[in-house]
Image (cartoon, rainbow, N blue to C red; front, side, top):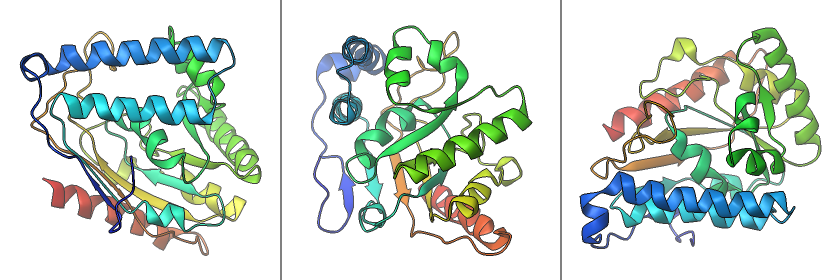
Length: 256
């Protein structure tokens, strides 16, 4: 997927097949399951490296586009121009960002995610997750999770690996600033790296009932990603935290 000269990626709209148009959720999830299966087999064989991660992530993007979902990405040049690792701090809405972001960011910045510990034991997908060396948190012990994020984040940043953090913790289609904690600010300050704010709207992939990953795909909802200019944390980081929140809120409002 090439970056365009004006730093904007837009889906080239093409007519979806009758099957994809009539059953977008079924069509997409069938493709996604096959993708996860292939990736899992590669990971078990220790053959799932950075390029395989990029390829499988971009295949998710293409699968969404094949069922009629339009995607717009802006601001990747902010990552491309960095000569240091960074923290990418954004809102968290669905499974879509965790599967598509590697294809967008990994070619520009090696990345690791903060993920739920339970995902490391998720059937099939666990092999893929473990191969990517994420920072795992329990979501049951805030103090232990905070320590894990700080220690794991600093370790990876020292290795030149950028870290993606969703301070809300839980996926939600609404953005509540009061639930957007300051872990990104604290980690960036301790590690001495910039923060790249990320605003996203990914509710085209809804949360499912039995499993949150198998939700309805709604092609009428456009997907948006916007990366902001790097932010250096100063002092207590209060102003920078507010700037990240404002960046997310402004984009979400514009995308309504």
